[in-house]
Length: 205
Image 1 (cartoon, rainbow, N blue to C red):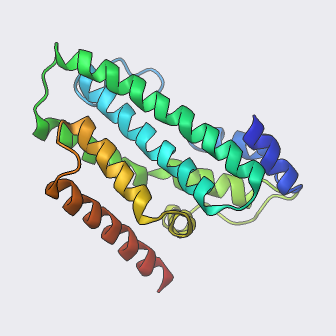
Image 2: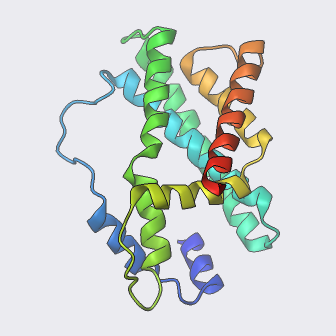
Image 3: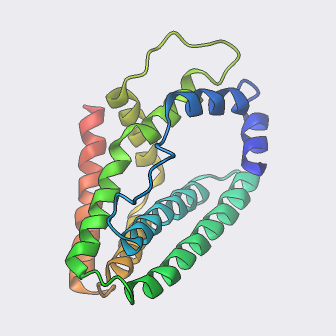
């Protein structure tokens, strides 16, 4: 609610209710699924950990990027909340693994599948709803996943620094049952940063 208030003060043309309504109508999740697509409770908790890794790093990146003091404070607090969510899911994951033992390879597969899902419509459509329809007048632009995913990625490229990726990879390694702060961790972090930079270069050319 605080971030919403800040956004509407910073941009008087931004209408959160309108953007959120467009998003929830245009992007819907299957709400009546009885079985997790991750295969087990442990798999689901691994996926939840990855979500919190992404959100905590995202708000940290905004905090580190902006000079606006109120936005810095808001994003710092939200990032801290998201990190606490990660710790909660990680704690439950350790308990769940005592009942549903998943090997490191299986845990890595869940992590990778959840990362791959970030390329679906959720983030791209949220960007579309917020930027094309949140003003006073409706946009005539039609939703195109590739176009809006690229625009979203272009914004991320301005925010993220190598240190943010490093922190994400450390948290992902812990979730997968791999030792952080190792040579493998360092290689994975450099690879993740390199892939992100290549994607940004691709959309700029």
